Length: 210
Image (cartoon, rainbow, N blue to C red):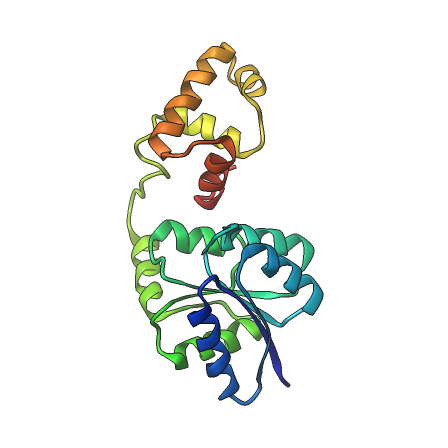
């Protein structure tokens, strides 16, 4: 059976490289190659590929957000992250968002093909460079909470922001003045180096909060 594959990556070189690679492998067919997150969602819905190969960082959004959205609107599309990001937060945020596989750019072509075939079969797979990090992450005692520069209260506020609550609702929930929450939000934005609530929500959800 032919595995139908779509690719979403903002680098033309990556898209063309995958196009060339898949053309050499029997049983794999590239049905679409798109440059951004918006087109990734549209393609997944319209083309219904067996596997969507996603980058994490694209000009108009995160591949992790795409994965999360597709769990709702196209749950049968298996998602494979192909990215340069090998940090723990990115790996586990992607898996929590529904990605079945995670492979680093620069992996051997055989590893990429193997990962596509694995996720198409419903199997989870981590590329060689990622698997060791995952084992280390899971075996490490007393893992730090996300965003260790935040105070416990700031982390609590951020978690509620990521859940979609506004300042007034958060103040009511925590039984404090709205101005106190405003101060916490200002501190959170500074520590996360974000300029807006939406950016803070993306970072928080990518870290598993909300």
